[in-house]
Image (cartoon, rainbow, N blue to C red; front, top):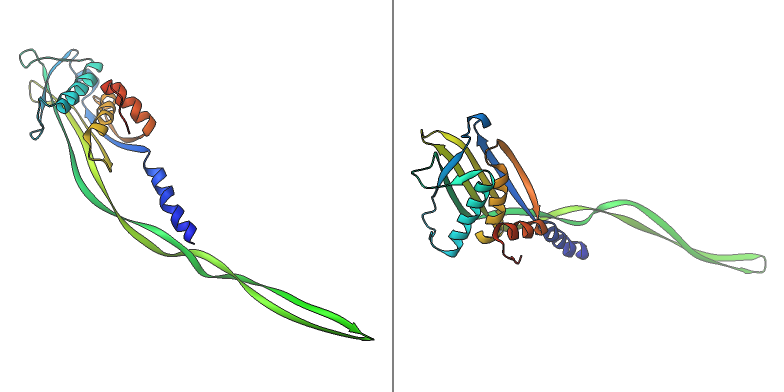
Length: 227
């Protein structure tokens, strides 16, 4: 029983620490209603972020990268035929209570008997003794639960494109829940997924392994990241 309790949390950790779950929710008008040539200005709505910081400028480059890869030209307000609003943040921490089963003896599944004895002879007479022992076979099952709290953050990136008439052309909301509150680790994944999802209609999720996450980070930032 003690071995089981020690192994259980190790198995849990090894399964949950190597994947990133990204939720995708996007909307778009039909493709034939989108401008043939999209020349858009970008507006960022992150009031608490310093727009001149290294971190903010890196995020802006990633956003511009996914937009230009989708055929959108970044320009100023005078030449633009649409405006793209961008916002991102980390919310939390939030607490979640989980339960892990405790395995123990719940009863017996049967029994078995063993007889031990000896026989000796003296003349025509036999002498002997015997002793029977009965053993119960234990039955194992869940005897209770161990409750523990975990804390997680919600990391999200939102984009929306609006034409000169104020009509929405498309929007994208990309989010992920996890233990880290370091946006530098998750933003490349959010922006990469957003680049594949904008101007579509999706309501789904993807799972990214830690190995793939490193490749995406290097692709989006052109720098080595340590995970």
